Image (spheres, one colour):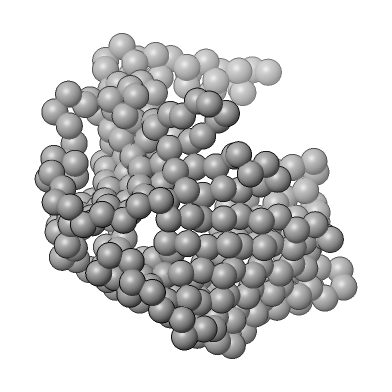
Length: 292
């Protein structure tokens, strides 16, 4: 759960997941899937997403579209065989490595969260397999219609909403180094006023049709009388052999600068000069905080 302060309120972004998953090492056949995600009120806005699979590894690329300009700045490599992920800045030729965590094990060890005392909010998830099928390469795609309904009682911080998704999905076992048969998650925004009580969230599940990896989707999201439409369109699916170097750190890339407070600055290399500047900036920030 992430928190952000906006105009005197605390906005809590709650990612709701309906199932947990364990860590696995997959064995993918070579595969490339390219698709476009168009979103927002302007159809021209969007991103092009490319997924590469080979053996125990996967690579995700995101191409941002801005008018006539297209730029690919970041890519993510999942090395399930090494239990790590690699983030690349392809423009600056920088990278950092992080360990893949088994979230199912951590959730089992987690402490119970005290129940909130605010208004009741009920989220209902319904997934229905229409029975329609079509071949995409050698993969059998199935059509699944999903509805997520958020119902809020009077005084709730969370606004009511409805999200209806009509999509086509294929099975890619082991995607994300996970044994989950399907990924079901959604974002709920809750604006808590200072001194207010967080909502009490309840979840219901009706249809439980398996979805899988989306190759095409159309989503209508309605909240406070306004509806937005997002679309995912398949551009290409190829089963041609892929070069293994696509899933490794290029030799001419350098480690990114680690931050003093955690994370990495993906715009700067990890050099002595940059580390000293990072420490100096932190000293100045602390001094200003103490003596202001």
